[in-house]
Amino acid sequence: MTAPRAVNIQGAVFALMVTLLAACATRPPVTPSPTTPPSPTQPRPEPPRPLDPTPVPTTGTSPAALPGWDEEDHLAAFNAFADGCRVSRDSAIRAQCDRALHIRQTSRPVTPSMARAFFEAGFTVVEQETADGRAGLLTSYFAPEYPARRTQTAEFDMPVLAAPAGWRRGQTLPPRAEIEAAPPTETLAWMRAEDLFFMQIQGSGYLTFEDGSKARAAYAADNGQTFVGIATPMARQGLLPQNGTSGEAIRGWLAAHRGSEARAVMALNPRYIFFRLDPDDGGDPAGAAGVPLPARRSIAVDPTHWRYGDLVWIRADGGNLAGARGSYQGLVVALDTGSAIRGPVRADLYMGRGDAAGEEAGAVRHPLRMWRLVPRR
Image (cartoon, rainbow, N blue to C red):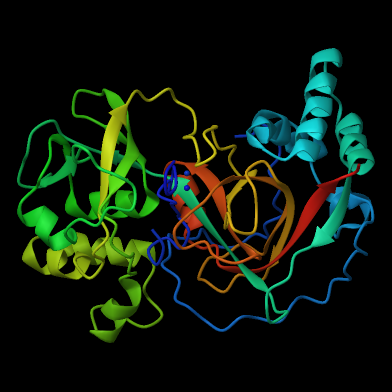
């Protein structure tokens, strides 16, 4: 989620693909049921759902009591934790981090059974609860990849702008429409309007120029305006059907109406993100915690309820969007945040980079349960 979110990095957030504004080589922590390929989606707010009937492990018990624990890829989870745990400021988590790094240094290779034993010996579990006791929400985000140009063309007509000189976090600048009408800063690249809009929702992305060179557009600043999703107003205005406000549908409409019509719709979201261009190292972007996000093993969370480096078991069943996978469960590490990620049972799962990750991320809107893994003292 970076400052707001690294792949949000504005927080940012394929937190809610458009209602909200970033890899393990081993098996991911998900158990998706086969469905038709999903497409990027802009979910709309809905009432909280009841919890699934899965028995709740007693607080203070071993992670072995978690639903689905036996099917987990413990080694993938161990590697994700070991890679990101040094960001934690909690002394107990740092102590477990030292254990993990020692195991990694002295055991070559670390085996799945060793990884499982590490978690079961070092942690107990506590389920997090919402204020009303109902299910929370899992969404997903990704690191998009877009074509870009060094100079303006009829198609690539929207500037990727650098941060304003002297910008300070929390500073309020003009809304999107005014910035686009009179760009106040240096232009770093040129993009299609709809691509730039979606990249600003994500908070960062990867650009490929006409000569084949690549760069990462990283979050650098924002205008301090509140994010407003455009899916619901587009449906209300009859621009899209009520059940057809997927990210793919929104992007298609914006592309088909490129120009004043599309800009008027995008202006409904006054928030604007400025960028900087960094080299593309071929890896995943860093989240707000400052470390690269392991695909499918890292989440953006609300920092008022979670800390970077926290180890979390997520269980999310029954997505309601077209093309949704059946379930997501497994151990993940809190490494990011986002402006729309709020509450104790709210997570944004980083799916990876590129189109395939974006297609899956867009169909994630699942009722969620979360367990904090608490270090044993």
